[in-house]
Image 1 (cartoon, each protein chain N blue to C red):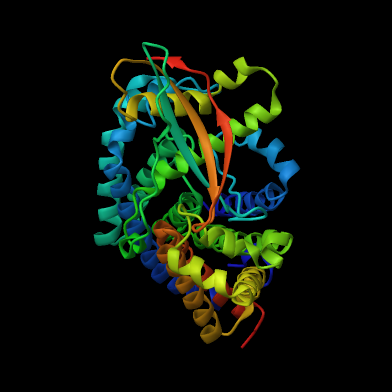
Image 2: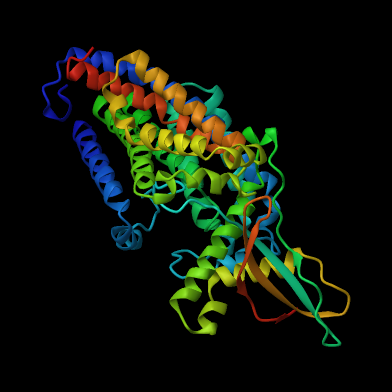
Length: 169
Length: 284
């Protein structure tokens, strides 16, 4: 058992050393491929690039007569409440959509093929969310989504960062 | 017992053992509170795991690299996984004893890993530090149960060490960022709806000097945190209390409520490491 203790200390020291290496971005890419059980943490909270934009998903429907409906939001940010100090379940879906949008943008930046983008997991996740969550317009046959980023609260700036194809229901 | 063959006198063994038992109970209670809160938030979002939900297994099962693809394992077991976590959290909160803590911690570690894989992008930094605290606490509890101080020390080293790295690299990465050095980071973050706060946005919009001072305060506190390992007990407790307030302010301003509990789980082990360091080096 004493040997087990010594081995445990050795493994912990190794884990700490690999964690230090993991904070280096180029090494992180290589190490994350080996980290199949997700034991290595990334400790760069809100840095080097802090999150200064909100990510919104908007959708619009293609109607049976060929007309296109107006863009409408499929995601929302509830106003901050004092209750959020202890209870804030809304942060989970917000994070998933934000990270999926970021992953989708990265995928598009790395490939010129629209097929690769449309087959990516992030694209499918957002598309599935948009078709399943937001009610469809009367006579709608297909839906398109877009990722819109905004910054600031008053006089906010807007960037349209991604527009999908129309997808039949 | 000579930890790492550094020449630590045997008397430290008994002193360290006393510290460990107290720290283990405190860690177990904090992990229980974090796990209960985090799991109940997942329960509140249970519809996300449904066929039409954001985390529908029909979509997430398309991921490459999954070792097991069974729908029964990944999809239909979610409810049971969440129930298991609630029971384990309650056990940690109300049932003291290294044996029961080991069982509860194994359950939480396994189900945390399940949720990390199942939800793909759903977990955050609080889940990371809490998972490490759980693994460390499991080592400590196993060491206490089998009377193996080395195993307990490995757990304290893991949790305290990772907490030190978390703050230090959090600070260093901000120090290397022009956005943080020039005070623009907090203005930008507070201006968002996802992580910001209307009051914070108004205050920072009026005073860029305050934003600059706070940015540097965060950078310095996080980067210099490893020095707390060598600090006298009063300074150490003041440092950890300040950091806890820092996380509570994040919960209020940014909605990061689970980070408060997750980081607090690592504080007892850090205190143990600090006391051991002080005794080893004859400080204070």
